[in-house]
Length: 465
Image (cartoon, rainbow, N blue to C red; front, side):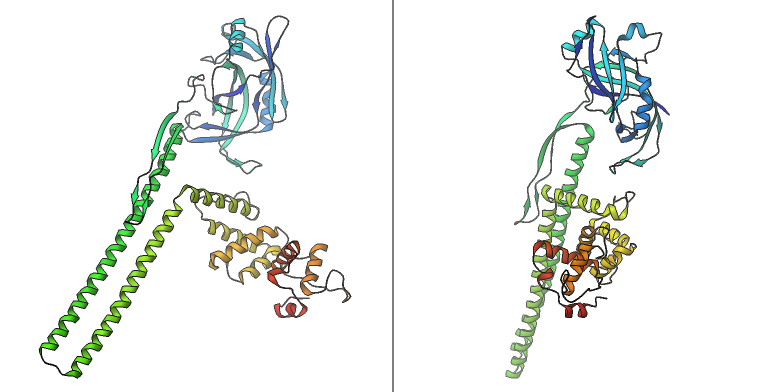
Protein backbone atom coordinates (compact mmCIF):
# COMPACT_ATOMS: atom_id res chain seq x y z
CA UNK A 1 0.00 0.00 0.00
CA UNK A 2 1.45 3.34 -1.12
CA UNK A 3 0.86 6.33 1.22
CA UNK A 4 1.40 10.08 0.78
CA UNK A 5 2.67 11.84 3.90
CA UNK A 6 4.20 15.04 5.25
CA UNK A 7 6.60 15.64 8.17
CA UNK A 8 7.03 18.94 9.98
CA UNK A 9 10.38 20.54 10.92
CA UNK A 10 11.28 24.11 11.92
CA UNK A 11 13.03 26.34 9.39
CA UNK A 12 16.24 27.29 11.27
CA UNK A 13 16.99 30.90 12.14
CA UNK A 14 20.61 30.53 10.93
CA UNK A 15 19.68 31.74 7.43
CA UNK A 16 21.90 33.28 4.75
CA UNK A 17 21.12 35.68 1.92
CA UNK A 18 22.84 34.54 -1.28
CA UNK A 19 24.39 36.87 -3.86
CA UNK A 20 21.24 36.78 -6.02
CA UNK A 21 19.03 37.63 -3.03
CA UNK A 22 17.76 34.10 -2.42
CA UNK A 23 17.39 32.88 1.18
CA UNK A 24 19.24 29.71 2.23
CA UNK A 25 18.96 27.80 5.51
CA UNK A 26 20.43 24.50 6.75
CA UNK A 27 17.67 22.20 7.94
CA UNK A 28 16.76 18.69 9.05
CA UNK A 29 14.06 17.31 6.81
CA UNK A 30 13.79 13.70 7.99
CA UNK A 31 14.84 11.28 10.71
CA UNK A 32 14.94 7.61 11.63
CA UNK A 33 12.79 6.02 14.30
CA UNK A 34 9.09 5.57 15.02
CA UNK A 35 6.55 7.93 13.43
CA UNK A 36 2.96 8.09 14.75
CA UNK A 37 -0.07 8.27 12.42
CA UNK A 38 -3.78 7.73 12.90
CA UNK A 39 -5.44 4.81 11.14
CA UNK A 40 -7.64 7.23 9.22
CA UNK A 41 -4.59 9.09 7.86
CA UNK A 42 -3.21 5.86 6.43
CA UNK A 43 -6.51 4.88 4.85
CA UNK A 44 -7.02 2.08 7.37
CA UNK A 45 -10.00 1.21 9.56
CA UNK A 46 -9.82 2.40 13.16
CA UNK A 47 -10.49 6.14 13.08
CA UNK A 48 -8.11 8.01 15.40
CA UNK A 49 -6.42 4.84 16.66
CA UNK A 50 -2.63 5.52 16.62
CA UNK A 51 -0.49 3.50 14.22
CA UNK A 52 3.26 3.49 14.99
CA UNK A 53 5.50 3.03 11.95
CA UNK A 54 9.25 2.40 12.02
CA UNK A 55 11.48 4.34 9.64
CA UNK A 56 14.81 2.47 9.69
CA UNK A 57 18.19 4.10 9.11
CA UNK A 58 18.58 1.98 5.98
CA UNK A 59 15.30 3.23 4.49
CA UNK A 60 16.08 6.87 5.32
CA UNK A 61 19.55 6.59 3.80
CA UNK A 62 18.03 5.11 0.62
CA UNK A 63 15.66 8.09 0.42
CA UNK A 64 18.42 10.74 0.49
CA UNK A 65 18.82 10.83 -3.29
CA UNK A 66 15.04 11.20 -3.79
CA UNK A 67 15.04 14.54 -1.90
CA UNK A 68 18.02 16.06 -3.76
CA UNK A 69 16.93 19.10 -5.85
CA UNK A 70 13.31 18.68 -4.85
CA UNK A 71 11.02 21.70 -5.15
CA UNK A 72 10.28 24.10 -2.28
CA UNK A 73 6.61 25.21 -2.32
CA UNK A 74 4.54 27.85 -0.53
CA UNK A 75 2.19 25.60 1.49
CA UNK A 76 1.43 22.05 0.35
CA UNK A 77 0.03 21.88 -3.19
CA UNK A 78 -3.22 19.94 -3.69
CA UNK A 79 -1.32 17.49 -5.91
CA UNK A 80 2.24 16.22 -6.12
CA UNK A 81 4.78 18.44 -7.87
CA UNK A 82 5.59 17.19 -11.41
CA UNK A 83 6.94 18.72 -14.65
CA UNK A 84 3.49 19.90 -15.72
CA UNK A 85 2.84 22.04 -12.62
CA UNK A 86 6.40 22.78 -11.43
CA UNK A 87 6.53 26.28 -12.95
CA UNK A 88 3.41 27.42 -11.08
CA UNK A 89 4.33 25.79 -7.76
CA UNK A 90 8.10 26.19 -7.40
CA UNK A 91 9.45 28.85 -4.99
CA UNK A 92 12.89 27.29 -4.40
CA UNK A 93 14.73 24.00 -4.14
CA UNK A 94 16.58 21.63 -1.80
CA UNK A 95 20.35 21.02 -2.09
CA UNK A 96 23.12 18.97 -0.47
CA UNK A 97 20.83 16.32 1.03
CA UNK A 98 22.81 13.99 3.31
CA UNK A 99 22.63 11.88 6.47
CA UNK A 100 23.60 13.58 9.74
CA UNK A 101 23.47 10.92 12.45
CA UNK A 102 19.85 9.85 12.78
CA UNK A 103 18.68 12.84 10.70
CA UNK A 104 18.45 13.62 7.00
CA UNK A 105 19.94 17.10 6.60
CA UNK A 106 19.82 19.51 3.66
CA UNK A 107 20.08 23.16 2.59
CA UNK A 108 16.70 24.71 1.79
CA UNK A 109 16.86 27.62 -0.70
CA UNK A 110 13.91 30.00 -1.12
CA UNK A 111 14.14 31.94 -4.41
CA UNK A 112 10.72 33.63 -4.63
CA UNK A 113 10.77 37.17 -3.22
CA UNK A 114 7.18 37.07 -1.95
CA UNK A 115 7.80 33.84 -0.07
CA UNK A 116 11.08 35.22 1.34
CA UNK A 117 9.07 38.11 2.82
CA UNK A 118 6.62 35.63 4.33
CA UNK A 119 9.48 33.72 5.95
CA UNK A 120 10.86 36.92 7.45
CA UNK A 121 7.38 37.76 8.73
CA UNK A 122 7.21 34.45 10.66
CA UNK A 123 6.07 31.76 8.27
CA UNK A 124 8.95 29.49 9.17
CA UNK A 125 7.92 25.83 9.37
CA UNK A 126 9.05 23.16 6.95
CA UNK A 127 6.75 20.27 6.04
CA UNK A 128 8.18 17.58 3.78
CA UNK A 129 5.88 15.82 1.34
CA UNK A 130 6.79 12.23 0.44
CA UNK A 131 5.38 8.80 -0.30
CA UNK A 132 6.18 5.37 1.13
CA UNK A 133 5.06 1.74 0.96
CA UNK A 134 3.20 0.60 4.08
CA UNK A 135 4.44 -2.67 5.54
CA UNK A 136 2.25 -3.68 8.52
CA UNK A 137 4.74 -6.08 10.08
CA UNK A 138 4.97 -5.33 13.84
CA UNK A 139 8.24 -5.22 15.76
CA UNK A 140 10.21 -3.79 18.71
CA UNK A 141 13.02 -1.23 18.45
CA UNK A 142 16.32 -1.23 20.37
CA UNK A 143 14.73 0.73 23.24
CA UNK A 144 11.96 -1.80 23.73
CA UNK A 145 9.32 0.37 22.03
CA UNK A 146 6.77 -1.57 20.02
CA UNK A 147 5.62 -0.47 16.56
CA UNK A 148 2.96 -1.66 14.13
CA UNK A 149 4.82 -1.63 10.81
CA UNK A 150 7.50 -0.11 8.57
CA UNK A 151 7.86 2.67 6.03
CA UNK A 152 9.48 1.17 2.93
CA UNK A 153 10.77 2.77 -0.28
CA UNK A 154 10.44 6.37 0.89
CA UNK A 155 10.40 8.86 -1.98
CA UNK A 156 10.55 12.65 -1.55
CA UNK A 157 8.35 14.95 -3.64
CA UNK A 158 8.57 18.48 -2.23
CA UNK A 159 9.34 20.59 0.86
CA UNK A 160 6.58 23.06 1.80
CA UNK A 161 6.90 26.25 3.85
CA UNK A 162 3.83 26.38 6.14
CA UNK A 163 2.44 28.46 8.98
CA UNK A 164 1.52 25.68 11.37
CA UNK A 165 1.69 21.97 11.75
CA UNK A 166 2.02 19.24 14.29
CA UNK A 167 5.10 19.59 16.48
CA UNK A 168 8.36 17.69 16.11
CA UNK A 169 8.57 15.07 13.40
CA UNK A 170 5.05 13.68 13.60
CA UNK A 171 3.66 13.03 10.16
CA UNK A 172 0.50 14.37 8.60
CA UNK A 173 -1.30 12.82 5.62
CA UNK A 174 -2.06 15.41 2.93
CA UNK A 175 -5.76 14.58 2.61
CA UNK A 176 -6.63 17.57 4.79
CA UNK A 177 -5.51 21.19 5.12
CA UNK A 178 -1.91 20.86 6.38
CA UNK A 179 -1.75 24.45 7.62
CA UNK A 180 -4.47 24.31 10.25
CA UNK A 181 -3.72 23.37 13.81
CA UNK A 182 -5.48 20.31 15.09
CA UNK A 183 -8.58 21.57 16.86
CA UNK A 184 -8.69 21.29 20.64
CA UNK A 185 -11.43 21.93 23.13
CA UNK A 186 -11.39 23.27 26.67
CA UNK A 187 -13.45 20.99 28.88
CA UNK A 188 -14.06 20.78 32.62
CA UNK A 189 -14.36 17.18 33.77
CA UNK A 190 -15.53 16.38 37.28
CA UNK A 191 -16.41 13.37 39.40
CA UNK A 192 -19.39 13.28 41.73
CA UNK A 193 -19.52 13.96 45.49
CA UNK A 194 -20.13 10.48 46.99
CA UNK A 195 -21.61 10.13 50.49
CA UNK A 196 -20.83 6.57 51.58
CA UNK A 197 -22.12 7.00 55.13
CA UNK A 198 -22.67 9.68 57.75
CA UNK A 199 -18.98 9.39 58.63
CA UNK A 200 -17.49 9.01 55.17
CA UNK A 201 -17.92 11.28 52.16
CA UNK A 202 -15.61 11.12 49.12
CA UNK A 203 -15.36 14.69 47.77
CA UNK A 204 -15.67 15.40 44.07
CA UNK A 205 -12.56 15.98 41.93
CA UNK A 206 -12.53 18.27 38.92
CA UNK A 207 -10.02 19.21 36.24
CA UNK A 208 -10.08 21.62 33.30
CA UNK A 209 -8.15 20.50 30.22
CA UNK A 210 -7.52 21.98 26.81
CA UNK A 211 -6.94 18.94 24.63
CA UNK A 212 -7.95 16.94 21.59
CA UNK A 213 -11.05 14.75 21.50
CA UNK A 214 -9.11 11.55 22.24
CA UNK A 215 -7.53 13.02 25.38
CA UNK A 216 -10.84 14.45 26.58
CA UNK A 217 -12.47 11.05 26.08
CA UNK A 218 -9.72 9.28 28.03
CA UNK A 219 -9.95 11.68 30.98
CA UNK A 220 -13.75 11.45 31.00
CA UNK A 221 -13.46 7.66 31.04
CA UNK A 222 -11.23 7.85 34.13
CA UNK A 223 -13.76 10.12 35.85
CA UNK A 224 -16.59 7.71 35.02
CA UNK A 225 -14.60 4.76 36.35
CA UNK A 226 -14.01 6.68 39.59
CA UNK A 227 -17.74 7.32 39.98
CA UNK A 228 -18.55 3.68 39.31
CA UNK A 229 -16.03 2.57 41.95
CA UNK A 230 -17.56 4.95 44.49
CA UNK A 231 -21.04 3.62 43.68
CA UNK A 232 -19.78 0.08 44.26
CA UNK A 233 -18.45 1.17 47.68
CA UNK A 234 -21.81 2.72 48.54
CA UNK A 235 -23.69 -0.42 47.45
CA UNK A 236 -21.36 -2.62 49.53
CA UNK A 237 -21.86 -0.37 52.55
CA UNK A 238 -25.66 -0.41 52.18
CA UNK A 239 -25.65 -4.20 51.77
CA UNK A 240 -23.64 -4.66 54.94
CA UNK A 241 -25.92 -2.21 56.79
CA UNK A 242 -28.95 -4.21 55.70
CA UNK A 243 -27.29 -7.41 56.91
CA UNK A 244 -26.49 -5.85 60.29
CA UNK A 245 -30.05 -4.53 60.63
CA UNK A 246 -31.46 -8.01 59.91
CA UNK A 247 -29.27 -9.63 62.58
CA UNK A 248 -30.24 -6.94 65.06
CA UNK A 249 -33.93 -7.45 64.31
CA UNK A 250 -33.59 -11.20 64.88
CA UNK A 251 -31.69 -10.64 68.11
CA UNK A 252 -34.33 -8.23 69.41
CA UNK A 253 -37.09 -10.72 68.56
CA UNK A 254 -35.24 -13.49 70.40
CA UNK A 255 -34.75 -11.27 73.43
CA UNK A 256 -38.46 -10.35 73.51
CA UNK A 257 -39.40 -14.03 73.21
CA UNK A 258 -37.18 -14.92 76.15
CA UNK A 259 -38.66 -12.10 78.21
CA UNK A 260 -42.19 -13.30 77.42
CA UNK A 261 -41.28 -16.83 78.48
CA UNK A 262 -40.02 -15.48 81.78
CA UNK A 263 -43.28 -13.64 82.45
CA UNK A 264 -45.30 -16.79 81.71
CA UNK A 265 -43.30 -18.78 84.26
CA UNK A 266 -43.74 -16.10 86.92
CA UNK A 267 -47.53 -16.05 86.41
CA UNK A 268 -47.73 -19.85 86.78
CA UNK A 269 -46.18 -19.63 90.30
CA UNK A 270 -43.04 -21.68 89.59
CA UNK A 271 -40.90 -22.36 92.61
CA UNK A 272 -37.46 -20.90 93.32
CA UNK A 273 -35.69 -23.73 91.48
CA UNK A 274 -37.62 -22.93 88.31
CA UNK A 275 -36.74 -19.25 88.73
CA UNK A 276 -33.06 -20.12 89.07
CA UNK A 277 -33.24 -22.20 85.88
CA UNK A 278 -35.02 -19.34 84.14
CA UNK A 279 -32.34 -16.89 85.24
CA UNK A 280 -29.66 -19.26 83.99
CA UNK A 281 -31.38 -19.61 80.62
CA UNK A 282 -31.68 -15.85 80.34
CA UNK A 283 -27.98 -15.42 81.13
CA UNK A 284 -27.01 -17.99 78.48
CA UNK A 285 -29.27 -16.29 75.97
CA UNK A 286 -27.85 -12.90 76.89
CA UNK A 287 -24.32 -14.23 76.45
CA UNK A 288 -25.21 -15.61 73.01
CA UNK A 289 -26.78 -12.33 72.02
CA UNK A 290 -23.71 -10.43 73.25
CA UNK A 291 -21.40 -12.68 71.22
CA UNK A 292 -23.57 -12.26 68.13
CA UNK A 293 -23.71 -8.50 68.63
CA UNK A 294 -19.90 -8.44 68.86
CA UNK A 295 -19.55 -10.43 65.65
CA UNK A 296 -21.93 -8.05 63.91
CA UNK A 297 -19.99 -5.05 65.22
CA UNK A 298 -16.71 -6.63 64.09
CA UNK A 299 -18.12 -7.23 60.59
CA UNK A 300 -19.36 -3.66 60.48
CA UNK A 301 -15.94 -2.31 61.50
CA UNK A 302 -14.18 -4.54 58.95
CA UNK A 303 -16.47 -3.28 56.20
CA UNK A 304 -15.79 0.33 57.19
CA UNK A 305 -12.07 -0.38 57.03
CA UNK A 306 -12.48 -2.00 53.60
CA UNK A 307 -14.45 0.99 52.33
CA UNK A 308 -11.73 3.33 53.62
CA UNK A 309 -9.08 1.18 51.91
CA UNK A 310 -10.95 1.17 48.59
CA UNK A 311 -11.43 4.93 48.84
CA UNK A 312 -7.70 5.45 49.42
CA UNK A 313 -6.94 3.37 46.32
CA UNK A 314 -8.94 5.72 44.11
CA UNK A 315 -6.95 8.87 44.92
CA UNK A 316 -4.74 10.27 42.13
CA UNK A 317 -1.64 9.78 44.30
CA UNK A 318 -2.45 6.10 44.90
CA UNK A 319 -3.11 5.48 41.20
CA UNK A 320 0.17 7.18 40.27
CA UNK A 321 2.07 5.12 42.86
CA UNK A 322 0.58 1.86 41.51
CA UNK A 323 1.50 2.89 37.97
CA UNK A 324 5.10 3.62 39.01
CA UNK A 325 5.37 0.29 40.88
CA UNK A 326 3.99 -1.62 37.88
CA UNK A 327 6.39 0.13 35.46
CA UNK A 328 9.37 -0.70 37.69
CA UNK A 329 8.38 -4.37 38.07
CA UNK A 330 7.91 -4.69 34.29
CA UNK A 331 11.33 -3.13 33.65
CA UNK A 332 13.00 -5.39 36.27
CA UNK A 333 11.27 -8.49 34.88
CA UNK A 334 12.20 -7.96 31.22
CA UNK A 335 15.81 -9.28 31.54
CA UNK A 336 14.30 -12.54 32.83
CA UNK A 337 11.23 -12.73 30.59
CA UNK A 338 12.64 -11.24 27.39
CA UNK A 339 11.51 -8.32 25.26
CA UNK A 340 8.60 -10.32 23.80
CA UNK A 341 6.87 -10.63 27.19
CA UNK A 342 3.55 -8.74 27.11
CA UNK A 343 2.46 -7.52 30.58
CA UNK A 344 -0.92 -6.32 29.31
CA UNK A 345 -3.75 -7.59 31.51
CA UNK A 346 -1.37 -9.04 34.14
CA UNK A 347 -1.19 -7.88 37.75
CA UNK A 348 2.08 -7.00 39.47
CA UNK A 349 2.11 -10.31 41.47
CA UNK A 350 1.47 -12.26 38.23
CA UNK A 351 4.41 -10.51 36.53
CA UNK A 352 6.67 -11.34 39.50
CA UNK A 353 5.50 -14.96 39.43
CA UNK A 354 6.23 -15.22 35.68
CA UNK A 355 9.73 -13.79 36.25
CA UNK A 356 10.44 -16.26 39.08
CA UNK A 357 9.19 -19.17 36.91
CA UNK A 358 11.65 -18.02 34.23
CA UNK A 359 14.45 -17.79 36.83
CA UNK A 360 13.77 -21.42 37.87
CA UNK A 361 14.59 -22.47 34.29
CA UNK A 362 18.04 -20.84 34.62
CA UNK A 363 20.48 -23.17 36.33
CA UNK A 364 22.36 -20.17 37.70
CA UNK A 365 19.26 -18.68 39.38
CA UNK A 366 17.32 -21.83 40.24
CA UNK A 367 19.10 -22.45 43.56
CA UNK A 368 18.59 -18.87 44.66
CA UNK A 369 14.84 -18.87 43.93
CA UNK A 370 14.37 -22.31 45.53
CA UNK A 371 16.21 -21.23 48.68
CA UNK A 372 14.33 -17.95 49.04
CA UNK A 373 10.91 -19.56 48.55
CA UNK A 374 11.71 -22.66 50.59
CA UNK A 375 11.04 -24.93 47.64
CA UNK A 376 7.50 -23.60 47.15
CA UNK A 377 6.36 -22.89 43.60
CA UNK A 378 6.24 -19.12 42.89
CA UNK A 379 2.52 -19.27 42.07
CA UNK A 380 1.78 -20.90 45.47
CA UNK A 381 4.11 -18.74 47.55
CA UNK A 382 2.86 -15.86 49.69
CA UNK A 383 2.74 -12.55 47.82
CA UNK A 384 5.24 -10.90 50.18
CA UNK A 385 7.67 -13.85 49.90
CA UNK A 386 7.43 -13.79 46.09
CA UNK A 387 8.05 -10.03 46.09
CA UNK A 388 11.20 -10.42 48.24
CA UNK A 389 12.45 -13.28 46.07
CA UNK A 390 11.82 -11.25 42.90
CA UNK A 391 13.73 -8.22 44.27
CA UNK A 392 16.63 -10.45 45.33
CA UNK A 393 16.84 -12.19 41.93
CA UNK A 394 16.81 -8.80 40.19
CA UNK A 395 19.62 -7.62 42.48
CA UNK A 396 21.62 -10.80 41.88
CA UNK A 397 21.36 -10.49 38.11
CA UNK A 398 22.81 -13.42 36.24
CA UNK A 399 25.24 -14.42 39.01
CA UNK A 400 23.94 -17.33 41.06
CA UNK A 401 27.03 -18.69 42.78
CA UNK A 402 30.00 -17.18 44.59
CA UNK A 403 32.53 -18.13 41.96
CA UNK A 404 34.71 -15.05 41.34
CA UNK A 405 37.31 -13.66 43.72
CA UNK A 406 34.97 -11.21 45.44
CA UNK A 407 32.24 -13.78 46.05
CA UNK A 408 34.86 -16.29 47.20
CA UNK A 409 35.90 -13.79 49.90
CA UNK A 410 32.25 -13.40 50.84
CA UNK A 411 31.85 -17.18 50.99
CA UNK A 412 34.83 -17.41 53.33
CA UNK A 413 33.40 -14.65 55.46
CA UNK A 414 30.12 -16.56 55.78
CA UNK A 415 31.85 -19.74 56.96
CA UNK A 416 34.18 -17.79 59.24
CA UNK A 417 37.38 -18.33 57.30
CA UNK A 418 38.23 -14.71 56.46
CA UNK A 419 39.79 -13.74 53.16
CA UNK A 420 42.93 -15.70 53.67
CA UNK A 421 43.09 -16.83 57.28
CA UNK A 422 45.44 -19.28 58.88
CA UNK A 423 42.90 -22.04 58.65
CA UNK A 424 44.08 -22.85 55.14
CA UNK A 425 42.22 -22.76 51.85
CA UNK A 426 38.46 -23.28 52.40
CA UNK A 427 36.67 -24.77 49.42
CA UNK A 428 32.94 -23.85 49.71
CA UNK A 429 30.05 -22.91 47.53
CA UNK A 430 27.11 -21.07 49.04
CA UNK A 431 23.67 -20.29 47.71
CA UNK A 432 23.03 -17.14 45.76
CA UNK A 433 20.68 -15.97 48.50
CA UNK A 434 23.42 -16.10 51.18
CA UNK A 435 25.96 -14.49 48.82
CA UNK A 436 23.52 -11.66 48.20
CA UNK A 437 22.89 -11.09 51.93
CA UNK A 438 26.60 -11.31 52.66
CA UNK A 439 27.39 -8.72 49.99
CA UNK A 440 24.73 -6.38 51.44
CA UNK A 441 26.14 -6.92 54.94
CA UNK A 442 29.69 -6.13 53.87
CA UNK A 443 28.55 -2.93 52.13
CA UNK A 444 26.72 -1.74 55.28
CA UNK A 445 29.54 -3.01 57.59
CA UNK A 446 27.23 -5.09 59.73
CA UNK A 447 26.66 -8.86 59.80
CA UNK A 448 23.95 -10.19 57.49
CA UNK A 449 20.53 -10.58 59.12
CA UNK A 450 21.86 -8.97 62.30
CA UNK A 451 24.40 -11.73 63.18
CA UNK A 452 27.72 -13.29 62.18
CA UNK A 453 27.99 -16.72 60.64
CA UNK A 454 30.29 -19.28 62.26
CA UNK A 455 31.51 -22.65 61.12
CA UNK A 456 28.79 -24.25 63.30
CA UNK A 457 26.20 -22.14 61.49
CA UNK A 458 27.49 -23.47 58.20
CA UNK A 459 27.13 -27.03 59.36
CA UNK A 460 23.62 -26.41 60.69
CA UNK A 461 22.48 -24.63 57.49
CA UNK A 462 23.72 -27.49 55.36
CA UNK A 463 26.27 -25.65 53.18
CA UNK A 464 28.23 -28.10 51.05
CA UNK A 465 31.99 -27.92 50.94
